Length: 121
Image 1 (cartoon, rainbow, N blue to C red):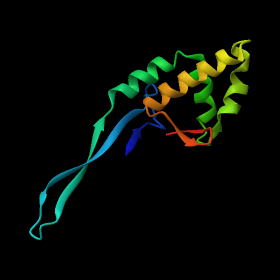
Image 2 (image 1 turned 45 degrees about the vertical axis):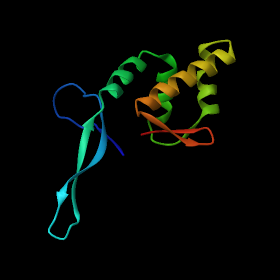
Image 3 (image 1 turned 180 degrees about the vertical axis):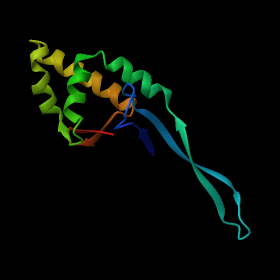
Image 4 (image 1 turned 90 degrees about the horizontal axis):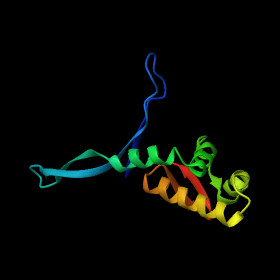
């Protein structure tokens, strides 16, 4: 299970970037009945922040992020149409989008829903 921590409203100061965590169940021991006593632990994922920072420089990642920002699923075809102005070579656009999607997925910023649909995590 993954979690994202973000600040949506702040009175003063600069906007903070989202931080990503891997949620893990940790067994602490057993109670008097022999049942497991456990807790949920948030393990910070540094790679996601690094990937997000690097991908912010990518024109393809920028298009993808602007499209999934609303939280609604976006098709790969819609991404291709939106990015078609970046290059006259459609195969180059497909390749750029595929790479950006893979990096954003590794960073747990977007995830596939299947059938060519993607959504922001």
